[in-house]
Amino acid sequence: MKSICVFCGSNPGKRPEYRIAAETLGRLLAERGLELVYGGGTVGLMGILSSACLAAGGRVIGVIPKALIGREVAGRMVEHTLLSRLEVVDSMHTRKARMAEIADGFIALPGGFGTFEELFEILTWAQLGFHRKPIGLLDAEGYYEPLLTLCDRALAEGFMKPESRNLLLAHTAPETLLEALTEYQPEPAIPWIRDEKQL
Image 1 (spheres, one colour):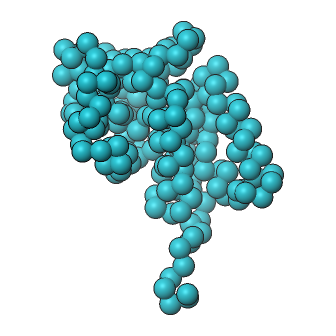
Image 2 (spheres, helix red, strand yellow; image 1 turned 90 degrees about the vertical axis):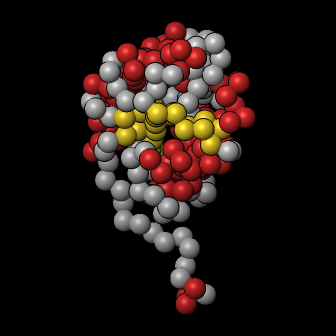
């Protein structure tokens, strides 16, 4: 694994522990020689994460839609220009597809609707067999406990298969989560889309 895509909030959240989690993850990625792929912004946890990775000597690739530059690149343009590479794309869909293409694994830090949407889309792609890359939640301060409970409920109620539930790894410590992603072995692929000859 050479690169990790991190989904996270464009807000910093109310607890200092969220900032600490982002800073720690950014530093660890740099120390382990893992390239950071992220949404390209300088605000919120995105900015904290990328700044920490850059400060520790890491490589950072940002992917941002042109329409969001004014909202997600606010005030810290000097720091933003230090990114190893910034790709400006035409849409949110292109952004997600491009990040998925160049990353070898995925982590979600705390965030809002945008983070949730990115996480669930990459999980859905894995469930459908479009990729077999590891996906993890950095569950800082138990932020994602309700989401994990919902996933377990979906499994118990028959809306999710065990192999799908197992696609989502979760840990409270960045070090432990990175180890889990590194050691991840995907289960045998189950085709969701049948061959045309079988239809």
